[in-house]
Image 1 (cartoon, rainbow, N blue to C red):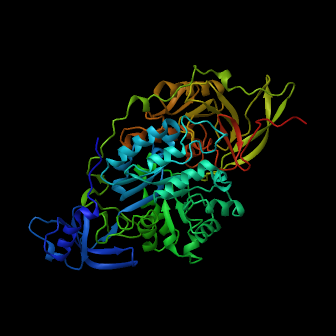
Image 2 (cartoon, rainbow, N blue to C red):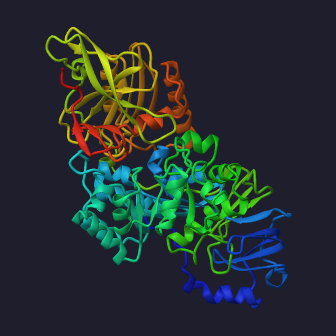
Length: 600
């Protein structure tokens, strides 16, 4: 299937000039609005936008001189005409949707450009999976740019992925038409220590003249951070404090501040601009991870911009952070990010720059959404069977697969326990004394079991550990094949038999999320594509996801966006403690550690 043909500027330059000069008539004119100019940071009332071939020909006080009888007139009626919003860093798979359905979900929220890193599917299906995501992205009526994933596995030697991404893969992908750069470089120790593979990927990207994405998930801003910046990453979204944002910008990086379904990192960092007065053009807004419920019920980048404004940011500066700043960072300032001549005609009409109701969305010169309804087709890629059959457990699991044997003769056991932190990606490395019953270590006092079940190569492997913070009660289990980043299967539960039921259920349906309590399935979200995504509409997936959230609450969980926390427990590049198919990983030292401490 061919991607939607969109003419480049050289192809239509003569027409743009002819319309701007009045020698030809515009195809569309947006008339009588307030021009939100993100280059000069001004609001300019009583302007018209003339559009031809999907691009802006001119923005003038009166475009009647290039308006003909066949010109489509869109009345702005004094509303603000602002650029379509850009999400600078995001993972489509986190929405549990394909690129087509994700696009359909966010277009009504005013998102017209996305910079996506499909490293989730890369871990499951390798380069072939990235190409599938890229190809569906290229079909969409909005701009979906793809960053070639850099780290699969994210931490070599500490986890096993379904496929590995090589420097040769990166070099090959740099020639694909929709590739905009290298995805987040999560192996920050590898970069800081000049790992040849990491440097080869960065070099291939820079030779192609494209942007290297960063991911420095450490509070240490000393020599390791300096070494990481020297290694080439141009941005970072892992900052959580004002000091993080300031240091990144001072070192020549763009500080990407995220508000996703579980990430609330804008408020703590935007004070670098609002209070410390740093140049806002080096700050960018993004979502990173948004699940379908957030998209359907709360919004996408419009939600992030509203939040930044609520945190004290000037509305025009917040809009810059979600438009022109992003475009400039990726070398696309002449294509997107502003309403100026030659750029793609991506325009939002809104009556309020603070509350930001998205009343009309225009992408590439066409009306694509109005009053919350998507008005265009978002074409689907023909996903092959190889992408739909990806859960291979090796054998049917039973309760005994989740048993944790205690040291001989012990009545209690001191365990290293993963401590979940609400609304944050980092966890805490805890030590808890747990009871021993019939020779097996049991959870207690808010501590339940967690297991990482290998699902790529049918090894039958199960890694068992403990996690604290979910508050689960009774006999329950939750299983998910969304388990960043290697995407094996994570099972969390208070009862081993329920854990086996949940794991086997996901093998049966080809992946997704399920919750069992007392032998009954309370919720199921089927994610048949790579065990990560559904090609159903976002509202349908969101409805099932809402039942999942309600089931978690019914099992005693009170954490905000607890599902996102669940899915990140195997992310072995974010401190402090994680689980992988190879064991417990202390991400402060990037070393495997034992589950149970030696008896003294």
